Image (cartoon, rainbow, N blue to C red; front, side, top):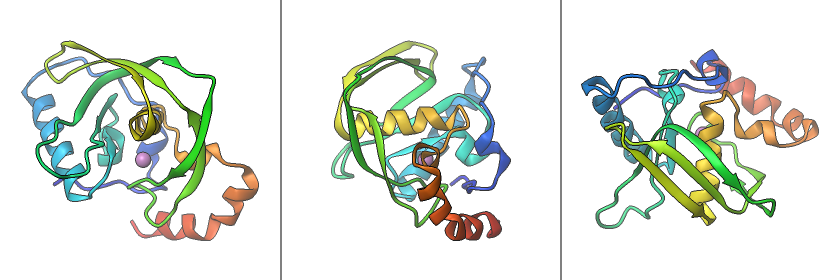
Length: 168
Ligand code: NI
């Protein structure tokens, strides 16, 4: 289990560096991130959320029943995002207790490498996967879901945000 970083930690606000070495260290980090994601019962986890400023995310949209194969995305890029948007509720392991309605593209395609450095693509993801991909890819650019709401909405969260930032 890796320790989570919470809102207020500067690592969450940095643009993460590309992964260059597809080595054992990377494989280990990926496994630990998947374990952490499962333990936290999350849908996605980005490396900066465990204190590693790297362009790496894991996403698992399965309901937790049966075997699931999480998406492991190294150096991911959104190659296509629909103009059509949908507004849905989001939360984040780094901002516990906060949920907000966030507008995202309804469909996205993503290109990335897997843990072995092989190219992987996800074409026209929709629903929860589309939302999770956009949320996690934001993380590696230092963007949090609270950045997508109005300053008025964010101001209403300031008490909760201060509490999260103060609990480190
Ligand atoms: Ni998040």
